[in-house]
Length: 513
Image (cartoon, rainbow, N blue to C red):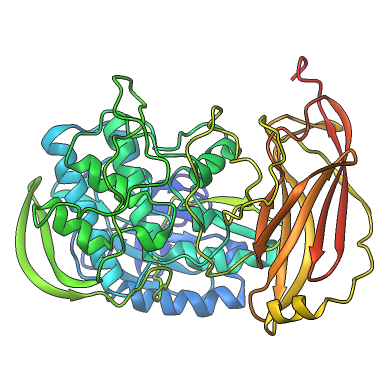
């Protein structure tokens, strides 16, 4: 391995590690190729200054390093060292080779080996009580001895540090619905991400696309995955892993067992709207394999080693899972190329499950009509079909809070509606917003989870009443804003209290933008 001199301005030493050169930089920090005191090459990740200076980050960082060191060395880059002093850094094994993102598509035996190796790594990570939270092609390195998973766990620390600036961390094309909705993230989110990565490796495109962030987020929340020409039996395994409801996804150790021929996915009730059969196009919907029900999480799972590019079954060990759907363990820290932050008004950390949506809409980038991001159904259809395109500034204060009725008090059971806000997210062009902007109504909670009723109004038109549970991040129904120019948008919570937020939304002229 050639060791080039460091560039001007780069450190020559980080702790006891001599720096050779910079190999990458992302949202979490800078990665260097270094040399350990014993002469072996290592990857040294120096974390970004603004995150590193956070007291909350330092506490989480120490916990996650300890958790990362518990992960068995199966198809991962092991954590070797870390420091909390000054500018924190993490040292891991150096894996020489391209990332899966750089390597492109995989087929045949190469695809199968990739699936088994990455499933092995994630099963080992989960066994140690760690959740990756940002599994994506850039975090899979194709080393000489086979694929290695890197950067597990550190996304949670970054997420914790960034909650003060109201951000959710992850990479949209590979994030699970519950992660996008700001809800509780457990091992099931990694299962969803694993399936998305396998589809991307096989077809060249993630199952929910990789175009604009708002479009991808809508598809993840509401549409069926597009599995292209992904072959069986891998197709059925991947399809089951992409269930909207995390409780319906198999455990990673079960996925691994299926991949090596332990058993086929068991029959279970199909989705409410079955996807169309495989079509001869590159980005086709999947066939309709039966949806897997939640299975017992204690079974024999295979631990595999990848050596010389060949997957070898090293041992079969008892891997009783410590996880249940929606319950996370202690995450760990590793270097990362940096997840994509997604801004929100208020971080939401509910354990509410994201319900499975219906069949794909005609325009995949649009959210299912009248649903919020927790999958709540409206009691009356808003009757609109094209994309929301909001804009701008709150113009009115909340209404005075109405005293909840006795029935509303019973429904809250010790909880209540907390803060209520409205936020447009997208591209603002001067004084107007482009048509692909999403308008969110965000409802916090006080105490226990509380059922609440809300409605959207656009230019005085009532779009229908919807029931959801706090905390929630609702979306303005598709097609509510149909013309360029200013619109008055109201997000109104009706019960158990009355609170209203209003925006003046100015849409750009579609012919100009």
